[in-house]
Image 1 (cartoon, helix red, strand yellow):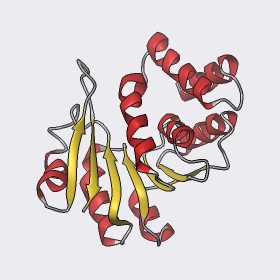
Image 2 (cartoon, rainbow, N blue to C red; image 1 turned 30 degrees about the vertical axis):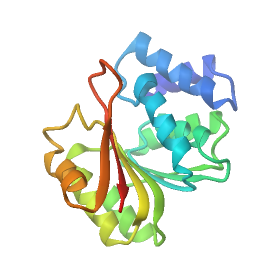
Image 3 (cartoon, rainbow, N blue to C red; image 1 turned 90 degrees about the vertical axis):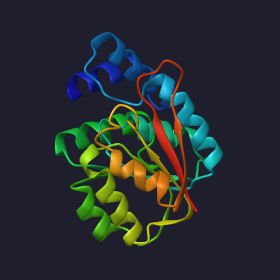
Amino acid sequence: MSRNLLKYVTKLAVPGEAPSVLQAIDDYAETMGGLIHLGQEKGALFDEVLRNSAAKRILELGTNFGYSAIRMAHNLDPSAKIVTLEIDPDTAAIARRIIAFAGLEQKIRVICGKARQIIEREFSEPFDLIFIDHYAENYLGDLLLLEKQGLIRTGTIVVSDNAVMFASQLGPYLHHLRDSGLYESTLHQPPRHSDGFEVSRRL
């Protein structure tokens, strides 16, 4: 599927134009199906969060094929840098090609491997914004590791996708964000949409 998506994007989108690449991915999802991604409705809300964040140093857990990383790079300050982690080598390779096609390879670094191992060895400075969108069962453990490693500071924004769709699996995770006293946390859900994302600012 990822290779079909790559062919679709490179055929129909305009090289170097992130909005065109995002639109092509959205069109593919609508016509071909089979994609799980942020999408247009949640994406519009996400764009507002990004633009209001003034984030310069961003971490994403779960690259998939690069859609949300491209969306972040397009909506954040030109100086912003994004590191995105993907466990599957083939998916990471496709994401790199789509990101390069969008002209954003200098702003987005894709690292392939297990998030926990990468978090432990790669980073030493806190992030301004962290977007979590990988396996629901890993959300809490990886968040706690990010906290332990000092990669979340006062003011860091944690955006957690699928906070409605996977609410039952994310119960302890959402409880930590909403009730630990460490974060100010709000659910963002488009009207009549089946899913949403949690935005949590570290106090």
